[in-house]
Length: 160
Image (cartoon, rainbow, N blue to C red; front, top):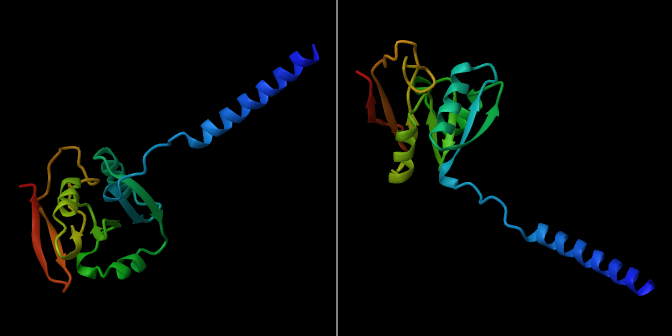
């Protein structure tokens, strides 16, 4: 009887150890692809920014949201000229993404890796991602590529 209890105790200890080791070595979710991560800087009260974040997630991006009281500091940090600003700033793959830039344009930027600072959609064009309107109409707008010297070129055109 004592031997049976000792055997049961040893078996229990071994089983507990095996479960603990298995739990420690089990593989977890693979880390997010760093090329798929977007950090978004926005004000907590901005509804269109929240809609853009939701849109990016639906497009397959992993989005980290940082709610700030003053967005001017993040725009300054990325070197975004005031005339090219919008309601939120994001960072993806070492580039800034300013405003309501479509996900496909961000994916293209990350795939092509141009020698530039980032992309911007100045203002808040109706119908752009996060700025959808009930009619479904898209106001024509350009996505601009901002080069390292601050000059811009049209990267993509949407609407109209």
